[in-house]
Length: 83
Image (cartoon, rainbow, N blue to C red; front, side, top):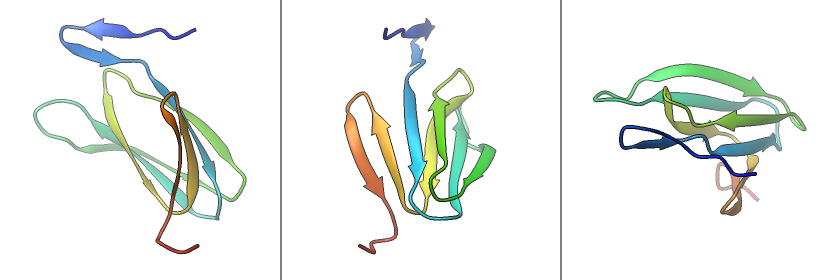
């Protein structure tokens, strides 16, 4: 079910899943183009899950706080170095 779209040399369409493991996890969308800028933010509380997609406008997603991140490449736990 993997669909990858192309616009010129850009590849986009991948999804990731972010599950907050604490209150106040912040997701920040970063733009594509010559200058990378913040374009969208979301806050998640513990247990909330968000499915996000890389698009023509979103080239990166910054995650602050402790969260489980699931991708087609595997999973990782983000955090502040606290276990």
